[in-house]
Image (cartoon, rainbow, N blue to C red; front, side):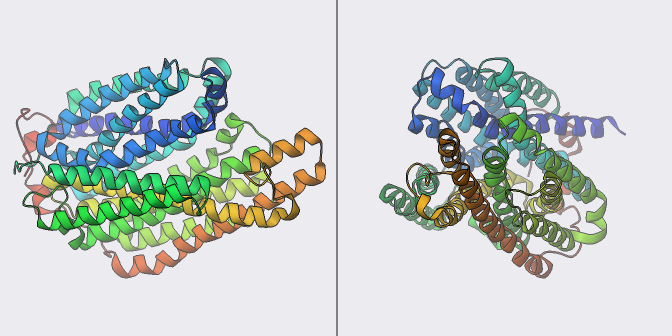
Length: 514
């Protein structure tokens, strides 16, 4: 292996460490919430904002961050975001009040919103060959996905042995390693066409994504009759419509809507969103099932997600050699089919189901994601010119983030509706609020019949929700076979034109990619 090739893969390792940190931070907080409620005297609203603040900042800043990286240099902004992420993690760890923690979580979300698209945007620069780029995309996505189930495992262990701030301190050494490696190994790249910043577009993008994201979060938490949730959602949607209209007439638009004219980017984005929707079905229900029905703690819940990690690793490893032979259409279709099968089996889960059956279907779900998601994202990125990699990857990540938020709201409504219907006469506060509240009431009163009915009602709601996820993935299988390319794309001319010195990381800071 050549020196330049070695540097490229080491740089990818640095990016993977950074993405693993973001994946961990998305879920590690869940195990700390009960402790935070006591130590910071946080009410239920504050606990909700600990997560919501991060999600809103992530959704709002992602698209402008990609455009800024294209303009000013992706490496510079990525390094700055890593430093900011580390500083915000320290602020979270030592927050003395709920307000301080919420503010620090906002900054953490802003840093993550810059890190996600720009770390993805440098992949076409590092790996001009489409085959290597697909492998790199696989590693990049897997590192993020691994962080999601590892968060509760690591966080549960830290809470048991240290104080709640330790769940944020784990970010710091990983960020230091990532920043040092990015500084030494990742080349600088930017769009050579230095167009003026689209300030109106930036403001409209931020406000629109804030409104839509907060609206879905609010509706998911409070129910579809919540007036504030609808006001935020409709207002955000209206601002997004104005943003799109502005982008069509702006001389230097923030987002080039012509990206969607490219079939690869358009359909790659569509299937990425569908896979994300199915993925959130698992993450939304299975931890609740483990804790409310099986009665395990957060650490035990995280450990029982390990089969999903195994499936994810197997699926992603199989994807590397199979993609050149089968092509994107068959790979994405196969991954969606496996994902649909896993979710469909999950819908058959009942309160008395053996764990081995659960382990099998969550492993299948992980394998489906590992097969399909990297290929879908690679198809989208393969159709991008390197100069537009920042804003293109930001748009792709923003769509995934929106899909996850919408999935939680919609799927949560399906689960809650069936759960309350199945409760019958028990559908009263607080039992009807959530399965965790229902289980707590049943155990505190020693009512075994109530406990059985609450757990059974949740099982019915989880089944209905997973059937919806499985149906989405199954319907997408023939669509993938129809619209995606049959063969893996060759390296595009725009990517092949990258200077060799830049690809190897030996070019000067001022070098840019066209």
